[in-house]
Image (cartoon, rainbow, N blue to C red; front, top):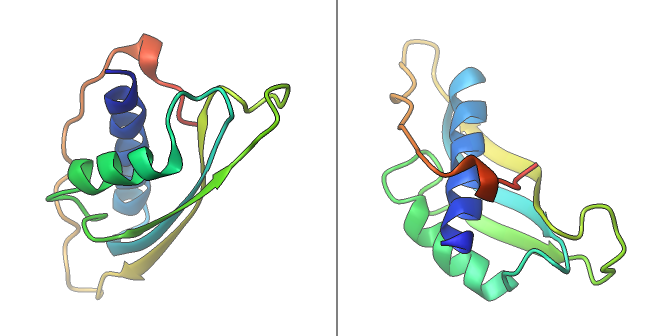
Length: 110
């Protein structure tokens, strides 16, 4: 459940960003994972691949940097660092924004 909440919130943030900026397709996402986030980079990639099916981030590469310092202020979260995209043509409409629901207490994507 913890991983699902982190990934759901991450994908929702990417979708909102893509929709707001009229991006057609997300090609690469870079995140930083804190030492106390409770998810390994490989596990995060697996969850990300599943959670992005049918979204603008489907097939996007996920770059993960692990923060080893447990005292770092970001140690308990997953932090979205950058998103690479393809832009929409002027006449194209952005895809509808999907609805994600997750418990607020689990949301730690910043």
